[in-house]
Length: 349
Image 1: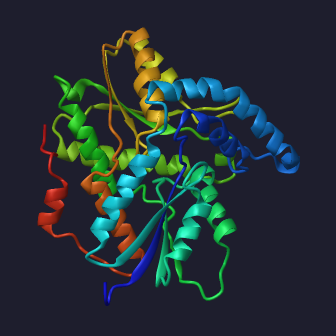
Image 2 (image 1 turned 120 degrees about the vertical axis):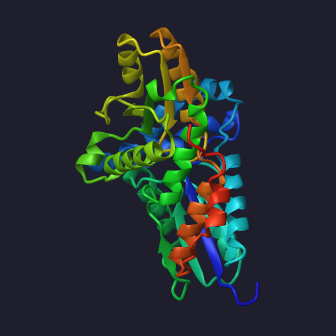
């Protein structure tokens, strides 16, 4: 690797329980996060509240994990992304890529320890795998990084990539995934395309969280590109939100309410595109592919499909690669041949 920059790359994700026994402590860590449940002057109650919620929710949540294999796949799938990203970056830099999960192993503290053991680094790139910036995800992960890593004197320069909701290759990756599903419908132009994003308390939006605006921008760009690339792109699309927790007001409309309304209107075919998730986990595999599917059936919807997450698809890895290289001052323009290779499988319908 002589002559190449040695770059530390930290991939941030939420994490998920890797066994049935991990469900309760995972939930405890989640609800202990002040960026998830802001209590203001009542912060002293955070630990007992987190303990209470995690105790009450652990059994039903463990039951849901049991239906998708007994554990969250997010650790395995993020590791695949990490490996593919390293492979893509090797011709350009000497990458030292690590994963920092927010609520379960490998924790941020584990990533920091591994990074320090890696030795001399020229620069560090902080790359949350949340396409859309939010106080509850991106900011929380970056605050945890700063708390654990600190501000070491003389340390390598850091570059933070706090969103990529509008990156052209990320948009193309979503369009490609949707396009692959449209082939499963006799007339895809007539189906209803539902974009489903993870919900957010309205209180965070009122404090300036840009998440919903960025989600809306992604949906707009995906549809603009989809119409150009697919003659059978759906004429109707809707944006809704899922995963509400607690009594507080959350972003609307909800996924379940939207499905119920469409069923009452006589809609028979729909495709749900999880727009804010880059890997599969319980929100896609259970909340959409099991719960929402059952809801659709109850309301007379005959054909229900879910778009797979972008995962380690060539286009998405190309997007991450571009983000890292630009962060460290290396701008690589993809050749037409390489872009065409990444876009294989996206002919017009």
